[in-house]
Image (cartoon, rainbow, N blue to C red):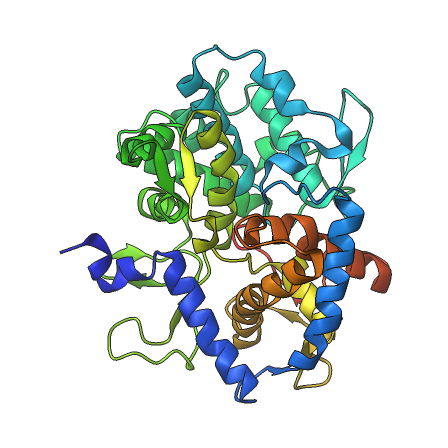
Length: 398
């Protein structure tokens, strides 16, 4: 029996994310969702905006993949290149170090809140949100907070919220949302690695390299490996067949005749991480194929784009003024609709840019346009640049 034949393992795949998101999208088109009305007539204007943003950001249309590496270069400083120059010449060891860094940085990349910022000592530049978290986490890695020149599992198990607060320059006057959740996540990572006999997060590089056939590795294999090997790091929410499902939630619109009924996975941070591991793998000589098997990321920039452009409209007045928990039906629906709408808008954006799917996969649509378009609208429409829907973050979801 294939591992994915079990009910739990079937939910630890990008196919489950996409398929179940499409089901809720179908309900939305039929006006059968609890929280949202879907207005597909607004998609043309949304695609126009995204294409405009792509051209503004990348006039030559040479868009890199959506990945954490873009944030490490905030302000035009190639911080990873400077750190990489200190590493051994061995390609596999450099890949392990890149895995160490990006795994930790992505796990620390949940929403920071609108009040937090980070001042970089070397440049004096100030960053916030994802860029600030990236620059700060790279500095902590370079300074050996997670271990000497690498991420050490034993060190991760001992990390405290106070350690991270110091590294992130967080405090009462500079509050960072979800510090305890971030520290707990890294502690869980350390314990999971130790239990699996892995000496560092970068050991995943060797596991994935061993799966490559003729030097090629499907992108979905990256996500599946992350979910299987690092699944225990996620705070216990839904558990099926003894398996922690991580970023997986309940919605009554998901109908099945098996134990997965009512469950819809998103695996947002894990997919963000999968996208971010593509470049270290390819730099080590492993060609990653089938990138579009991964889905769009259901987070507040992509999701905010569709709210701000009127593709999605709340059924109940006052919803956008209140805070909501990640497991609320409203938020689950919003995230599912975001995944499906990103699939729907990608070919529309390509058509406007005159590009083929093989040259402009979803990873480039996300990086070049939807994420930045969502951020631009947020800045234009709200003084704090925050999302249109307020979701309480524990540091492990968004």
